[in-house]
Amino acid sequence: MVEIEINDWKKLSVYLEKIFINLKDLSNGYVHFRGQSDKQWKLEPSLTRIVLGDEISEKKAEYYEKQSILNFRSQFHLLNDKISYNPENHNISVLIDMQHYSCPTRLLDWTTSPYVALYFAVRESFEKDGALFIWTIPQYKKNLKEKYKDNDSIDITDLIDFKDYDYAEIVYSTRKNERIVKQQGTFSISNNLLKSHCDLITNIAQEQNQNSGLIKLIIKNDIKVEFLARLKTMNISSESLFPGLDGLGRSVRESLMIRKWKRE
Image 1 (cartoon, rainbow, N blue to C red):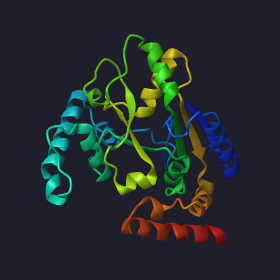
Image 2 (cartoon, one colour):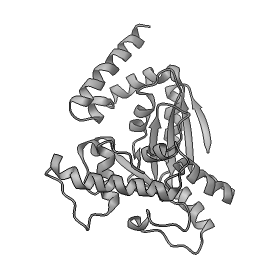
Image 3 (cartoon, rainbow, N blue to C red):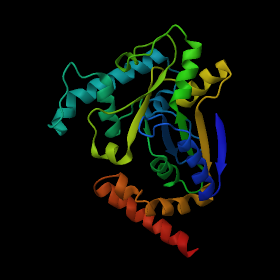
């Protein structure tokens, strides 16, 4: 995985511009972005981080996931009578709802906006460098096709149970909530609960001696608040990305951080 250090706004803007110039169609979801406030963190879904804390097999991890899904489906209607599940609802659609309500899942949040992702890279942990991940999907798919020439593309509804080889895919919500819309949100999902998505993406590229399609921009900690201030002028802030009082509360904190930075 390529890593590039970003130490000012101009360098970031120039780099992102190069990415978009090379895209034929900005609306096709060829590139996805994810921001993390600590550059040391891998691309690990919340459920993966939990099960990796123990000597655990993938089979046991999948059992934990099934129990979590069953628990969520059995009680969700008590708290939100506007949404119901029936036997035809595939588990991936349930996982997306679980992700929204802070349940540990195998999903990882992404966005089609580099600046929304940048917000998540700089919004906290101001003593640590952040990371902005850029995932070019066509390159990843090309690497897969070269290694597994005889395999057709995997139907997303079969992905969790697919065991021939490790595989990651981007999924979209078919019933978007307000937060997903505001954040231009998407999700990555893998059939291997015990492997980080960055390792899964880069390993297949190394085996093929190819570019992985995954880039990691390191956002230096001393420019995080400056970037937060710049994003606010673009209407990218907690108030615009998190609907309701939660976003308002976060926004007050961010405003204080920016005011302090401007006085220094």
